[in-house]
Amino acid sequence: MTTSQQELLPGTRRALLHRIAVAQAEGRAPSLVAAVVRGGRAVWHGARTCVDGHGPDENVQYRIGSITKTFTAVLVLRLRDEGVLDLGDRLEKHLPGTGAGEATIAGLLAHTGGLAAESPAPWWERTPGSLRPEVGDVLGEQPLVHPVGRRFHYSNPGYTLLGALVEELRQAPWEEVLRREVLEPLGLHRTSAQPQAPHAGGWAVHPWADALLPEPLEDLGRMAPAGQLWSTTGDLARFAAFLTTGDDRVLSAESVREMRTPAAPAETADVMDGATYGLGLQIQHRDGRLLVGHSGSLPGFLANLTIGVADDVAAVVLANCTSGPLLSVVGADLVRIVAEAEPRIPEPWRPLSEVDRSVLELAGQWYWGTHAFALRVTTDGLVSLGPLSGNGRSSRFRPNGDGTWTGLEGYYAGELLRPVRRPDGALGHLDLGSFVFTRQPYDEGDPVPGGVDPEGWRGIR
Image (cartoon, rainbow, N blue to C red; front, side, top):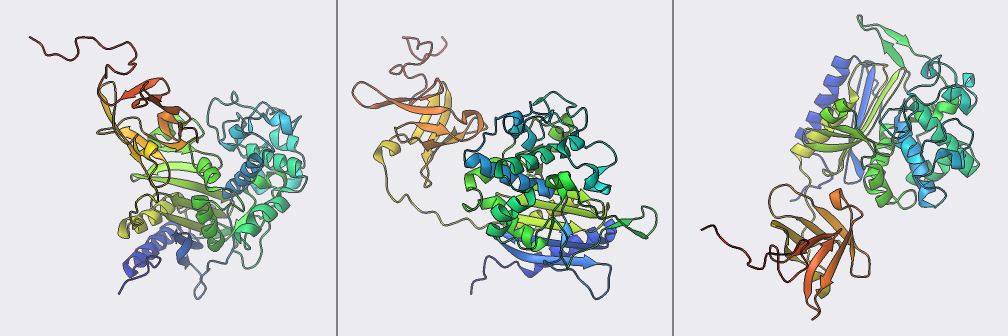
C-alpha cells in the first residue's frame, strides 16, 4: 500500500502543532493560526487560541500588513510584462511631480529608491489615512534620505508610490485593480482591503502583565498598497503556491522567479544574517535553506509567509497581537520541520524525448585554461556548464535558436555561449564572453588568448 505524497505523516503534524503551540504560549498571542503548503496545495492547518471552545480556522481573516507589498509588486510586474512600463524607467516618466521621480520602478520595488522608511508624523499605522489624502502628504517635504539606487532602505512610502503608479496606468483604484487582476483569478475570495467577518480583533499585550488592550483599526488611505490587506491562511496558502510556480492568468513562472531574485544591495548586518530583498519579496538564508516570502505587522497583528522553493514547502503564520511571537522564525521552522521529516521525493528521471546531435556534440568535458568543466544537456532543453570539482562559476544556458546560448544565472547571466567550428566543420571550442573553452587544456589547435608555447607541456629537469 502506498501513502499519498500530499498527506503529512502523523509525527509531522504533531511537530507542526507543537511548534505553533509553543509560539502562541511563549509569545502570549491571543490567537495564532498557521498553514503548510506542499505540492501546490495546503496540506495542514493549525490554530491555537486563548478562548476556550473557539479555534480560528483557515477562513478567519487577520490583517497581513506588509505582505500587501508583495501583492502590489505583482501588479507592477504585470504592467512590465504587458510592455506598459520598464523596470528601469524613472518614476517621473509615468507619475510626474512627486519629488521622488529620480527613483526607478525597480528601485522602489527593491527598496533602493532612497526614500524615507515612514511618512511624516503622526505615525501612519495608528492614524486615519484621511490625514494623508495626497501622495505629497505621504512623502513630505524631503522624500529622499539616501542617494537613489545606492543602498537598501526599507520604505513604506515607496510602495505608496507604486500603488499610485498602478492607479495612474490602469485608471482605476488600486484595490479594484488588485481584485480584478490578482485576487479573483487566483481564487483569493477572503482577501480584502477591509475586514470581512469572520475576522480576528487586533490586540496589544502588556509587556509585563497578562493583560490586553484593543488596538485601533484604521483605513490607511494612500498607504494602503504598503499594508492595508486582510487575508486568511487559506488564501495565503494559495498565494504561496502562486509565488512558487506562477500562474499565466496573473504572472508567469519566469516573472515570479524574477521577484524571488535578489535585487538590492544588502546592508552589512544583512550580509551577516544572510538576508536581502528581491522585487516585493524578502530573501533569507536560514539553516542551510534559501527562503523567500514576506513578513507583515500592523498594530494588533503579525503575519508571515515563508517559501522554501527547493523543498516545495511553504508556511503561513498569522497572529492577532502587536508584538510577541517571532513569526518569521516560526514560519521558517514549519518549513524546516516538513522538509526534514518528509524530504521532497524527486520526479522519476526520464531521458530526452529526442536528441539533437548538434547539441549532444557540446556535451562532455571542457577546459578554461587548466580549469576542468563539464557541459551537460538537460531534459528541460537547456545546457549547464559547471566545474568538475570544487566551487566555481556555473550556469544554465537557454538556446537562442541560432546555435548560440544565453546564460541564465550567476557570473554568466546574460552572457553568450557560442560554439565555434574549425574550417573542416568539426567542433573546435566554446566562446563564452571572450573566455575560450577547449577540449584539452590550452589546446594548441584553438585560438587560446595569448597563444600556447610551441614546445608544449614539459617537466622540470
